[in-house]
Every structure is written in structure tokens, then in C-alpha cells.
Length: 78
Image (cartoon, rainbow, N blue to C red; front, side, top):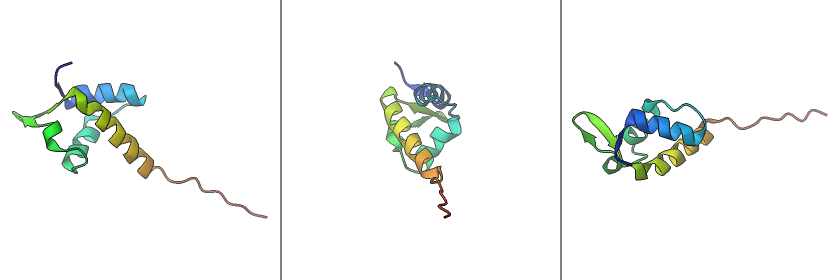
């Protein structure tokens, strides 16, 4: 598989996660330094994603989703 743009990577990552992934989610991972820029360099104003980076993107999005999911609250009233 050749390098892909963020939109194409979002579709592939979405298939792996079983949900819709918007390109902005992937872009944010690079912007915030979660994934290094050398994995997805910007060329001509477009970020190119190497296929080898897809596993790291999936892992980072899963971790972010777990961090943003509120813990289950149980109330034990007796």
C-alpha cells in the first residue's frame, strides 16, 4: 500500500475501529505530538500517512477514547 492522505487514513482507521473517524481526529494526534511528524510529513500542504503508521493511529485513538469515556458511576444506596 502506498502513502495516503489523512482522509484516506481516516477511512482505513475507521474500518479497524468499527466507527467513523474524521480526518481532524488524526490531524490532532500529529498536532498535539502524540504521533511524531516524521511518520506523517506535510508535503505540499497535505499530510502524507505511511501505512505502517495506521496501527499507531488506531492505538492512539483507542487510548484517547478510553481517557475521554467517563467511568461508570454506581450508587450503592442501602
